[in-house]
Length: 327
Image (cartoon, rainbow, N blue to C red):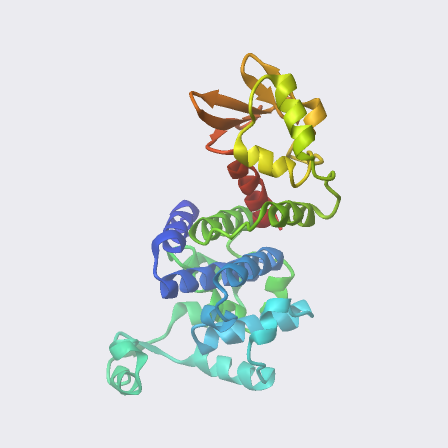
C-alpha cells in the first residue's frame, strides 16, 4: 500500500466525495487502523465522523464481512466503544463458521456482476473459479503472506483479515501486519481535519465559543466580562478604537487563560499599543493591526510561522477547531 497515495485519495474523498463515498472511505480507514492495532485512532476517527455528520454508524459497515470484522475486534479488545452501541449484535460462533465458509469459497471473474444482486450471484457461479490467495492466507493464519499480498493493494482488504476470530486477538494486540506504526495516527489526524473542513462546526455565540474552548481544554474559568466603561478607558489610553468583534469578546470575558499551545490573552488593563499595533497576548505573539479601516489579527508561531486571520473571532474559531480535532 502506497501510504501517501492512500492518504491523498482519502482526503479527496472526504472533502469532495458524496456521502456514500465519504462513509466508505472513513469506514475503511477506521477498520485499517483497528486491524493495525491502533484501536484508539479508529475510535477517534469514527467518533468525529459521527458527531459531524450525525449519520448512523451502520453507514460505515457496508457488508457482512465488515460487520463481522468489527465484532471480532471488539471481542478481542474486551470492550466496545460508545459509538458501537448502535451496531447490531452478532452471534460470534455463527459468524466464525460463516467466515470459515467465506474463506474457503473460490472466487470467480464474474464476482460482483450486477452489483452483487441475487441474479449476479447465480451468474458468478457459472464462470471459472480459482482459489483466493488472500483468503487462503487468512485461513492458514499466515499474517506474513496476507501482508505480502495486501501491501500491493491500494486499499488492503483488512475486513477479511480482522473478521477471523483466530487472528483478531493478534491484530488487537498490535501485530500490525502492514507495519503502519505511527502512520495510523497521522492519517487519522489528517482525515479528522478534513472532516472539520467539510463540516465546519457552528461556534455559536461568544459565550458558547469561550465555554467550548475551556471545555475542550479540560476545564478552567475565564475572567469576568469587561464593562463598556472599562473598554472605553482602555481605548482612550491606547488612542484608538478596538475592532468590534474584539470588543464583543471583551464584553464576554476580559482575557483568556493560556493553553499548552495558545498564549494568555490579556485583559483590558494590560493591553498596549506599539506603533499602531495592539498587543493582546502574553507572550506578545497575538497582535491586532489595522490596514486602513480594516483590522487583522496576526498570530506569530516560532515553529509554524505567521498567520494573518481576517478577524479576531477567526483566530479563536481556529483555536476551537484545533482543540476539537485533537479531542
